[in-house]
Amino acid sequence: MVTVLVPGPLRGEVGGAARLTVRAHGTLRDVLDELADGWPRLSRRIRDERGDLRRYVNVYVDGEDCRHAGGLAAPVRPGAEVRVLPSVAGG
Image (cartoon, rainbow, N blue to C red):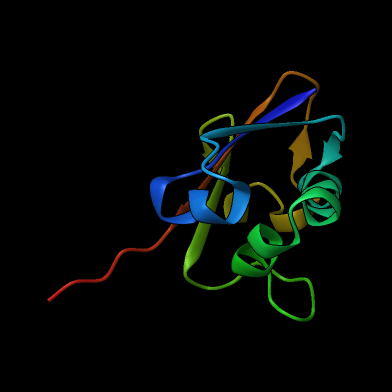
């Protein structure tokens, strides 16, 4: 099982849940594919129409930025924690 931490701004897409649990592991793509099956609205906020990570969303696997660990091919072990963080802009 993998725990996905959902930040406040995205919790409306998952019924208010702060944590989701998925069975998928192996790669970040596998985890996000399972998220798309169960929570398609959340998936659309994380990945674009091609399935790539959106530019303004950061994803960390066990504290490491996935973009520095292989992107969607980043390894995700059983028991891992995946944190999704959308960029926040202000003025």
